[in-house]
Image (cartoon, rainbow, N blue to C red):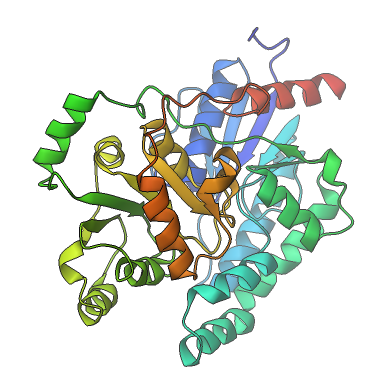
Length: 377
């Protein structure tokens, strides 16, 4: 890509300047790339948790208020005020802000999240209480309001998957679906790549995986949303040589108790934080994401890139890259998932993953978008 034609004053808005978290990491890298192009970049945030990239100046607004409602409204107000004061040539929004030239949507609208994710909790008191808390939260209604305003005001909207775009248009029918850009996150295909058969055998031996064991793997931070209870239930329907490895998350006690009640405790391992995710994927036979809501799971693509058979619920934006036979409709249907896992485990392992040339991904489309918008001003 050629260097920018002129230096511009740009703002990137995001509540946290950090390298931890998918959206935060992307915002950090985007501001770095824009500064490297010769632009003057301010990073407007509520708090700064890491050093900024070279050439990027943090504008720290601070945090105000003890409640979520106040924090959401404060950042929207303070960021808008800072953008007006800064007189920027272009503002790139990534938080819950009212005005920007380009807005990146990393997840679906809150109304769609409520609709789909409620099934992640068991029917009865647990689900009803969770939904009641959400609907009574003033902070959530503030997000609703901000979403309605910014969808009307923002000239250019970018979604991280076609599924998020569909959800967005469903929640905001006034939007023109064809005018919304889609740019995917792209896994690091050098870091996440297949290994040879002998190397994989050594890796499985290091993980104490038996020769006849079939490892079904998943990764989750939010155990409820990613359907871990249904995966534990699925294990009771699979042969005894099938084992489940769960990376990530906190406090798996209720799921361990469930595994004991189903007599599959010896076949379910909660690994906690896993630092070497490529090795985790390479050692597995099948990766499964039984999510009730996922904008675009990186884990599914990373596992696929590592040569692991990957299956996902249809409620995940990155399921678009899987063969249709590896996508299931209902993450609560334990019987159907068990049948799919057994069938897929017998299929050949996939070869190196090739990113489709007609699917935009990574940072370059955003840089082109920014500089085209600047040229048109």
